[in-house]
Structures are given as structure tokens and as C-alpha cells.
Image (cartoon, rainbow, N blue to C red; front, side, top):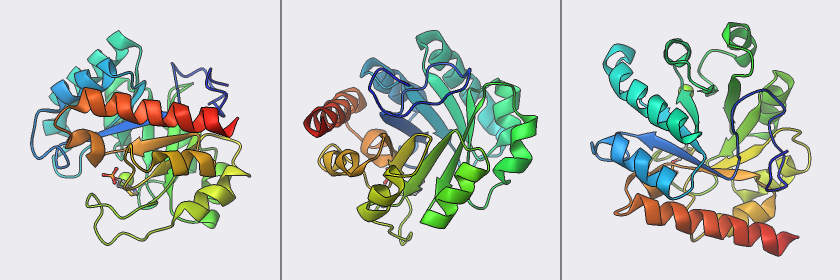
Length: 225
Ligand code: TZP
Ligand code: MG
């Protein structure tokens, strides 16, 4: 369990705090260097970061990923790689995040270092249950709200969080269109945390935005107690 009282990953993984999960993506950052954004979200108090890259091949991504991993580890921040199991292993990342069209979690788990976090993106009750049964350490569910990061992507709505919050035994992370203005409703619906791309990557001041999101999450939790 984490200090927040939310469900926590019961593995030997390094710090895993499922409150604010910052997903850093070059496209969402409009080509801005991700390293200063990473430094800003860490300075703002974020404890878990994912590198998401849909365009660059892994060889091109490696130097940036190594810099990001080193900074996360120096700060005690959990560092997860999206999609690319090979890169996560080469880097010694803390975890890997898989989508519905990536390699299945059952196939990937045996490749991972002991204690490595395996997260899975889901878009329905059935997918979330399957991810749990496959041994996911956390389940992400979305898109909760409309988002430019995945335009036209199926909206699952906050109702899915309400349903899954009652039955997931691992941290439930809401994703999709989440901002400081709407995060309260998502946490109150039962999410342990939220994953955020554009609200952080496109923020003029990602450190201040991180603080705003964390404050809103903590306020929502406090109100729910
Ligand atoms: N999966 C479901 S919605 C989404 C992903 C990766 C995009 C979330 O991005 P944003 O910018 O935080 O809405
Ligand atoms: Mg994927």
C-alpha cells in the first residue's frame, strides 16, 4: 500500500505511487525536448513517469530514454516505457506499459526482471478483467474524456471507473482528457490515480501544472474520506 491509502503494487518494484502518472510524449510536447519537461514534473512532485513514443524507432529513442531513466532513478521516480519491451529491458526501466494491440502481458511477464511493473491499457470491463487475470500490476482505463492525444478514440466515460474501482485488486489508473479541472470527479469515482499526457506535455509551466493536478487529487481523496 502507498502512503496515500490507495491500492499499491505489491511487488518489489521501486517507488510506485499511483496518484499522478505523467506520460511524456514528444508529439504531445510539439517537439519540445522532453528532458526539461521531465525535470519540471519531478520538481512538481510527480513520482511516476512513462516515456511514450509512437514515431521514432527504438535505436533513435535510446539516448533520450537513457537520459530520462537516469534522471528518474536519481530522483527515485518510477520510470516506465510504453509499448517497447526490448527498450525497457535494455534500459533497465522500472516497468513496461502495454496496450491492447501490444504483446500480451502473459507473454511479456516471463521476460521481465523480478519486480518490474507491468501495466496494461484497457477500454472495457472485459479488458480490465483480462488484464487483471493476466497479472497486470496496474490497470489503466480510458479514454475517460475526449482528448486530442487520441482523437476519435472510444470514450468509456467515468462510469467505467466507478465499476472497476469496486473490483480491481491492483491500482486503477484513469486516462484520457484528464486535467486539474476534472480530476476530482475521476478520483471520487474510484480511480487510484490518473495518467496525463497533454495537460503536462503542452503546459506552459509543467511544474505548476503538476502541482495543480496533485493538489486536486489530494483534495479529492481528502473529501472522499
Ligand atoms: N489511452 C487512452 S486515452 C489516451 C491513451 C494513451 C490519451 C491520453 O492523453 P491525454 O492527452 O492525457 O488526454
Ligand atoms: Mg501500446
